[in-house]
Length: 241
Length: 295
Image (cartoon, rainbow over all chains, first blue to last red; front, side, top):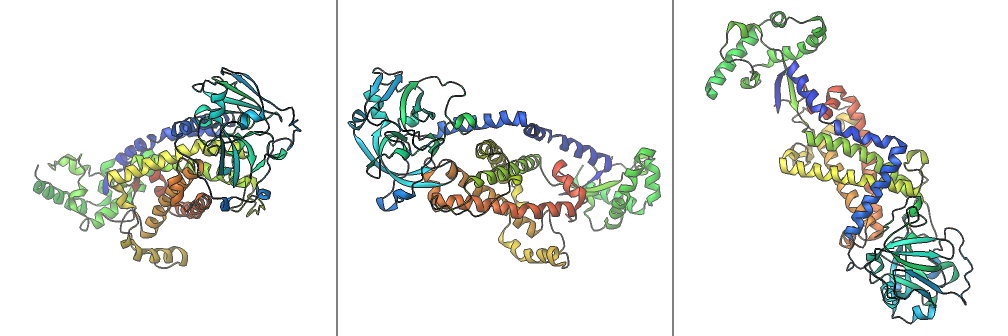
């Protein structure tokens, strides 16, 4: 609607309305690298918090028919350092520590003694690609029951034979599709895919799926700067899908 | 005061103004040297009012501050009036600027993220589509870009939701929403801009081509937000993934939404430059001085 205003009046109104936009200038702090580094880290922390709040254990990741699974040769190998840390598969045991009633060393046979789950799920990489693979293993939740873990603890920490490390929120750990995976495509896990045991959680991004598992620890506290190999460099800690 | 009185007084005022020679008004104002530039800025506006007074609804010409009784004193200080419209309410302006900043961050960090896997096909064999120059990107590396993306997505979504809620609840959307009745006006406007055709008369705050452009950006925004949600949480928002034709196509739609913005932004900026300061300043102060259109 067009109005007729005195010049002075228009200038006064314009100035007052212009000043109301001052809060936008706050976003200018992002122009300073030292501040923005911290702020975007906080931004990701906030997003992680929201992701955790959004996560529902009942929401299952999509599963696929055998015909939709990519051929084994087209399932990429991904390692951060070496593709084969030369784990001695004969002597390998899984160390269990932390808030559990039965800490100690567990053999692959003990893991495989638990109910086996086969699932064809999508493995999604943070880079933007994804592959549908066939995985077999035991539910992490079943294994945690076996070792008498306190599942009201907040985190599961894992350490790997290739010095990779990860930590996962307990809600995602207890998700029915979160596996301690020892098979891919019906075959024992091969060395480059993380033999003898890896994580396979279709509700998490690829970098959370630690390979060559060595130690599991149930804990309420994470060491700052030691929450995950990529996370410590800036990736989202929750990494949930 | 009844509206009839108002009308009568307004007409009287109108006549006074029409008969008042320009110098007389200037004398009454007694400009100080500092104000002189202001005065000369205003004069054309005043002349227009004097000339068009018959055509313009008389009631609007009387400023509320002028006393109704036309005493000799008020006759002398006939105020100089400027045509102006409060085009952009506060919420529209603040969300426009927050969104502009967010969009810049989302596009540049998004391009960096895309660089990590610049393809819509399989990982093996990987066929890259384009090599986006690093200089156009934000974040330094994939992880850094994701931090920016996951921070500014809140500003982007927040400003978008606020904008849309305001537009719908206030009814202000009518000035900008592109509707079927705007379709016939698109081509004459495009012909004017791109082929130097005659300029169609301005009938409102936005011409049909502007409405089409601005309404499209809202569509791009909604599309990029919804597809972004699917890519961020495909399991939690699996029902939405279905809407976009699955997980892979969602990423394509997300990219296309960005292309939409990239098509809009240069044109928008060129138009802002071509239409000058008063037009640009209206997105800061809300007030558009001397709008092209009539009431």
